[in-house]
Image 1 (tube, one colour):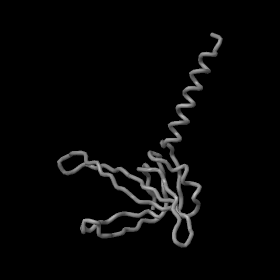
Image 2 (tube, rainbow, N blue to C red):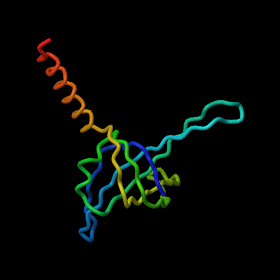
Image 3 (cartoon, one colour):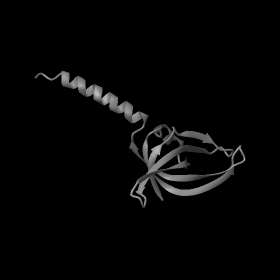
Image 4 (cartoon, helix red, strand yellow):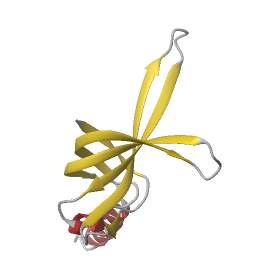
Length: 125
């Protein structure tokens, strides 16, 4: 299965009790449709994601980054501290494709635009 969405927070590397490293992050996907009355309905779905292959990818996974993920979905259910039942979606990621848009992209764009304005001032005409 593939999903495309934006990271809702920076990725974190955690170490399991078996000393394995896992990258955890959260992705929001957006969808829209029209109901019977013709109104446009926006729907956001949140996935808790895990990536086990290499922890080095965590530094690239920053809040706001647009990613395309391949993997499998699972569900989990638990009882909250308030005693209410809860449920969530987990996405076990096997491939990550970055499309940009996170903090590092914004920094790179700011640097590029600053350099371009200096270059235009140096033109002899």
